[in-house]
Length: 392
Image (cartoon, rainbow, N blue to C red):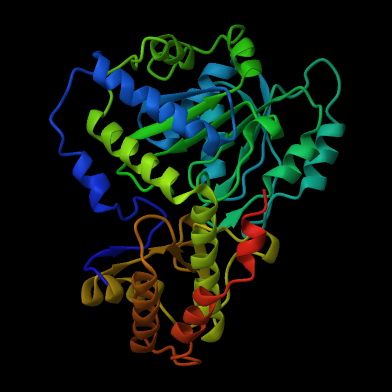
């Protein structure tokens, strides 16, 4: 196990081959070589999004991509239904408010996935002249370790005319996604999550229906104007100076993802997450997420009574070089979060879980200690969840 192993929801460990690509000399970001890089990236991303539509490359974080979606697709005063299941879904709602949208929240208790029946019921009630212009969804919520069942949410939305914006920042490439089949309009991801690239790029897929609606939108976006990004993409460029080195890295990472195969990537994330859940179950801990909402990219774990989460994290980081996350906002001190994304080997994962057990024991938690690593090893050899995770 390497020193300073990152098992957080992002940034994630990056393969040496991907890091090496960033050492390439700078090139003209308006020239033919970079044009070919952007075109390869866009083409390779389409099957990961599950779309034949445009995929745009933006310099920025996933949040920047989401702001681009909201500010380009809607006009001030538009009504949207936001369906947060944690901190990052709430952030998307806040972005919409900042851009002058009228936001209604469909509440979901943290730890649970969005109930498709509740979404369907609310949209059936949405009639009249001022119907919702948008529905804001989260694919995977790292703050709670929850993943929504996007196929069921797509069915719940049905033929409602609202444009659907999806935050897929921490879920895309780690589980099946079918943007076109599910009739989503704008889907956003970022480089530093399941594709295991350093931070710096947002990738935004846009449907043909969304482009038509953007022509009517009156939001005052400039830097993150997706229409401007599309115009430059036809030239093989970005509107503004992009992080060229990160694009080199993403190009290599996508080639390696293709070589491994999407299904293998889905299996690996699902199996690692199940191994973590098996390990914590063996030592008497429980996941924060509910059964039908477990994320494959991050496992949120309830902190046992009498244990200080920050002390466990500090021991792991300072004494053993393993970094995991804690809770955010009202979950601060109440959960641990262990990520599965990035260049993490089975040996890394098993070693980190051993360190987690050891740090817990040093902080006074004793029940079941010693069985977690064994349970994780058994799960890595055979995982019933893998078949379900790879079912499109």
